[in-house]
Image (cartoon, rainbow, N blue to C red; front, side, top):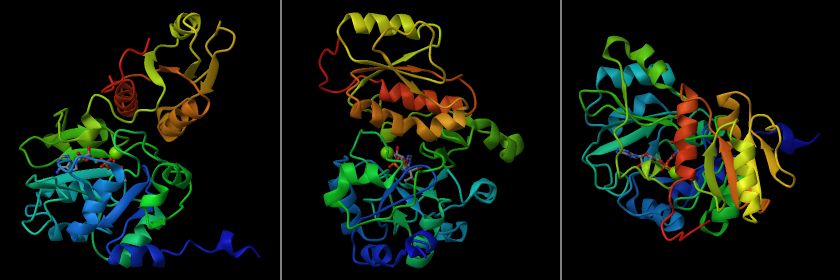
Length: 331
Ligand code: TXA
Ligand code: MG
């Protein structure tokens, strides 16, 4: 009998590493997180060092259950309980006023804190056995593509992490929806697979609004989630002609599209993208990494429709395509 296959991965060493102030990469249903004990400022500082992330960017605190909210938030409006009840464990992050004893390093000096109960079984065991909050951004280097497998984490952060828990490929594939409950209006700070429409359905009359780009939200920076390849958004109709233009300029070109565009020029690599928005979310980051691995210099990505989960995908693709600091001319 293959014990490795039948036994659930042990979280003991990861719990011990968290207690000792170390770093643990762990799977969640969205992307892999780079975690540290959220109540230990020295441990939290290691996250910023490992990622190369500016210290004023706040982190999400991952909890084992909504019952722990009062340990982190100073005010918990009824909407928070409503959303927690409807969507936790799951890919929703709720921003609330923070308690004074939350380490400043966790919330980047803001008076709010972002909280989430993830749905991955391994993450849930880790959080249950650890018992406290785990501060964790996505386990990638700052500005880069979020990891959706343990191998992605190893590629970027191997030397900097004490334990990497392997929970297989992330089921959702893009980061959680972030909602801000600190203002009279419920605002979506980062779109995700929990859509505006599903939030509105649960919140009823109160509703929710999109937008509110916070510069402190790195996921809201113009360039983020970026591979080495230059990413350009296109449509199914334009993909082949645009591919020709970049081929003519001598570039190695890839096209990320649900089906192979007709009349795709010779030598252009078609990278299949899922047909539904949820499938696309699941494979997006692995595809961006694969484009780099295949030496693609220009990746033409067919944008999904601007509704539902498609909005979150367009958001990530736009940022992957965003202007890069110091990138110079890339033509
Ligand atoms: O799905 C996810 O949310 C993943 C997994 C690991 O849980 N985490 C993740 O973390 O995407 P990160 O650090 O890559 O993105 C968290 C986002 C950042 O854009 C950060 O600025 C924002 O959450 N954030 C954290 N605390 C905040 C706060 N108090 N107010 C506004 N935005 C906040
Ligand atoms: Mg991130």
